[in-house]
Length: 252
Image 1 (spheres, rainbow, N blue to C red):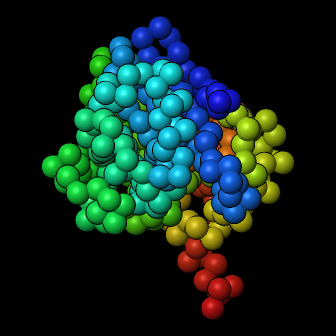
Image 2 (cartoon, rainbow, N blue to C red):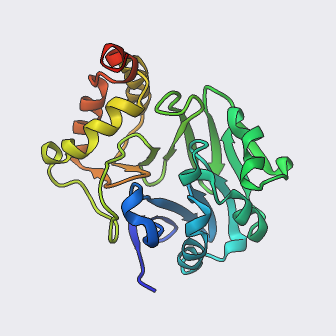
């Protein structure tokens, strides 16, 4: 099986890995999807593991980097099936706790997950979780696009796992890709963000939170990652983006 992983960060103790696994049988029917894994001293955090359709392949690829039993937490940025649909399968193979907004706990039974005692509920204003010698910060991203949505910032690697923020409408990604030309990439960003994000007001609120951290890489759930100067280029573009209710007259 082709390895679809890219190392985003590694320093000997701490590692961030990006996977880009789609259901290849229907790859033309939906967005390319990324999944992420953070490992420190053999303990893992899995981020937005995706639908049940990709569970077997992701399980196999994650197993190349960590013992599945050593995954301590699985984080879901929001409730969509391309983020959370495999929760029942992961619950069966790992003792991990599941981190999510309080808004979505009651919906997880529809994905076959019933053990609510394993859920770590995030308050609306976010939280900070000690992870080894470092921390994981859950940054509010409400209404971008989900009403209960969070981004995850890794203080060691300076990677921001942004969920659907920064997502690009692209064909299936064969291996992880990075934005090289921000202006050229805008074509893949604009349509998605204008329709799926709620309003410029919430875009600005998120950007202000993110700029309070030292972010080297933005890693979205769909499409390509942003690094170097493209981090600030994306934040600046998103800060001024008119979207959602700002464009309501075009929709009604």
